[in-house]
Image 1 (cartoon, rainbow, N blue to C red):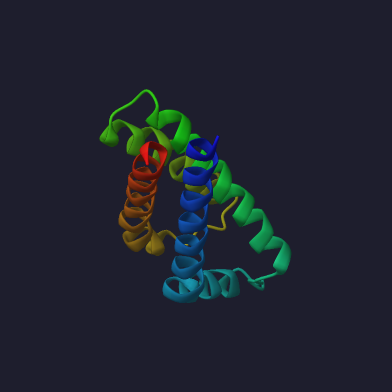
Image 2 (image 1 turned 135 degrees about the horizontal axis):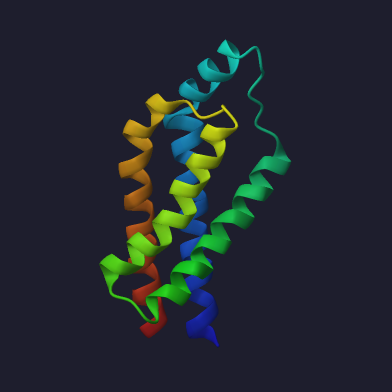
Length: 126
């Protein structure tokens, strides 16, 4: 049981921290400028943090399940595509995605998922 829950928890924490740092420290200016240009206010609310944490642990679980059947690279791609590409398509469709941030978000999100796959692999077999 420990070999199933521990890797999901550790990877979920990693994804949560990675998302927070990327969006609150590295890319927040893109969000603020984009929302301001639309006449909206970009708010960071506690509920948003809770929802991102749930999203992070759902992604961690997805990675855990995919890693059982797929290679390292396939797991990264199969987790990254639904988690990030579909999210970005959705928020682009809602016209709230600042496209300029993708220059940084794409490689950073791939690293985020790759590290989560490493965590899952390391702690699942430990």
